[in-house]
Length: 327
Image 1: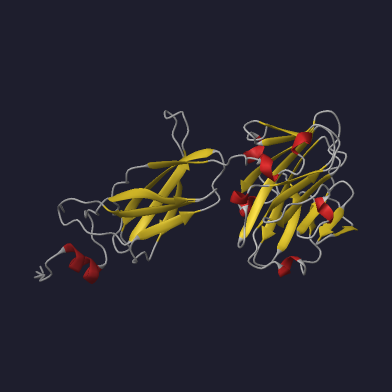
Image 2: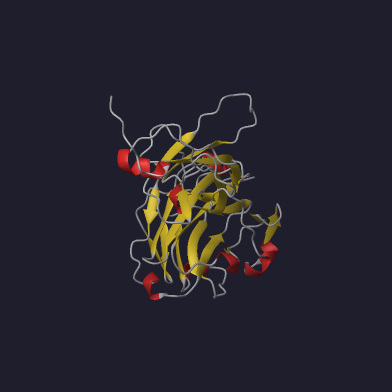
């Protein structure tokens, strides 16, 4: 029989020497939501305050779990797990992206240790967050011919009452100077087809005339006759992205203000819709540090338009997640 005399005074020393220790407790954590974006959330956590019992130690790995927060709590829910290692730097934070729009989520976290088998703290307090988008409002002062339109649904829907060229710039609250951005437009005409609609990025500081598509400071695309507006020049282009003979159509407009990439895409569930990209961004690149906003020029009587700002990751896809928002 052999006897060993250990001089280590604590469980952490045993872990360091032998690597595996059972029946050890890890400190529990408190979890909070530090920040949320349109489809993402940043979680932040810290060790729970309070006395230490039975040689409790700090974990060096973490297990995040999250799921959709459903009404039926009697059913067993499936959690999605994320195992984080090498998390020495404090404060501890982690970002989860690509969450579904319009869905409420529950998050929780537990502490683990890389050198202890089967050791895990109790899960933290669960925290909830709903991922919601909203319709943007039109500003009557940013419409060149307000007598020809009616704003409805708390100014989130613009209705053209007569056949006339009307242009609309979104409010300056929507202006962008850098980064990537994406907007989703629903066009609809209850009494016919959509026909003429130009969707563009326009100089946020400029007031435009009726035919803004041919003015300086506008970069857009018209899905009626496949025309590109590029710094006062409107040119016919070859494109499969068309909405002129459609009664209803949903399209996204994406812009990278750093590279001046500008493109439009038919929205589908799987992202396989038709697309058109601005052919030449040389003129657009001249507008460094100048704010731009989404801009609309339309003509056909009874055409209505609504707009949602969406995450760039949703560009051209995940149609069902925004359908309920539109009227």
